[in-house]
Image (cartoon, rainbow, N blue to C red; front, side):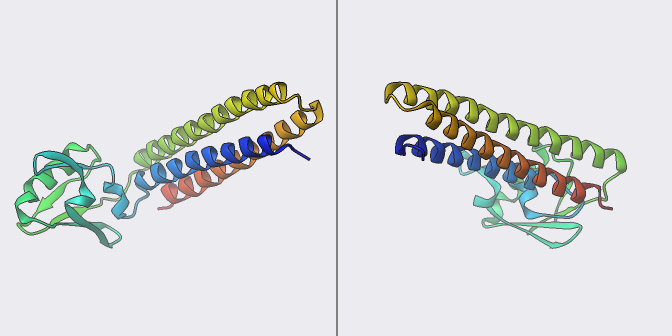
Length: 189
């Protein structure tokens, strides 16, 4: 049985690792997979009303068709700024402004571009794994300090470290699953 203080440390580790997974999921959503997706524009910032804002605060973004994203500003006076923000985000998209809405055609991906996107997904997945391993390292040090300061048994330390390693392996597996799914989406023509 693990001491309560060690259980709290492990719970905190689980939360931190989950945050890494959530961040990875958000990052994976921004990587294009051949179909139009409103979240592709999540990283776009728009200069409006004297400040830089996320696009979803100044416009409605939707994907009505697999090859089209529709951006409708809440205030028509920001239409040009929204278009400029999309262009400046370097997403490889060409917005078309018709005076009321912005239409963004999503061209089919070339094999080379698919490979680049898959490589980007792998890089982001590896970053998530590094983050998870850093949490493991910090938590392992914290476990050792707690065992020493509270004079807990070595068996408790071993069990806590084993639970931490199991948690790390589980989260790493989830990263691999997310990556495999995203790579499949990217490479599907």
